[in-house]
Image: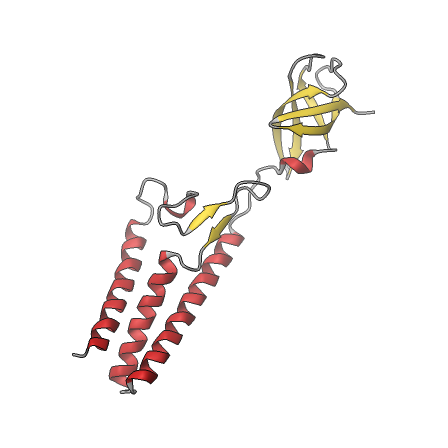
Length: 189
């Protein structure tokens, strides 16, 4: 057995073992697998900010690397044993097949995550200028509560009067601005 055969076999076995182990034990670790931002593998993360909640899948994630290794090892052995190609041709084909399988895996995961990423979580910045209803009276110098609709869901938030006047319950208001998590509102005309 040549050194290249050993490399192909190790790559194939390691990649396949990782795929099987991650499939069997994928949801057991403490942070919940792919659902958690800052996954221990470092393969995905959540960007905090205006695009909060979006998941990003890395092309160098362990899954993509494992698929590359598996395809590289399998293609290399096939080129070496079945087709009896010279080492350089077989190695080139094995690398290309590995890259192709890794790329397909990456694009499948990116597509999968982008399609399943829908959220009913409100984009707070889009609320400015929209109407809301006061559900807890807002005193002139205090805090009350409003309810508003965003993306078809009802949300509540603490609110202050922009004009520092009392605003009664069931009054329709317009969101003037948002400071932190405090909505500054004015009574609608």
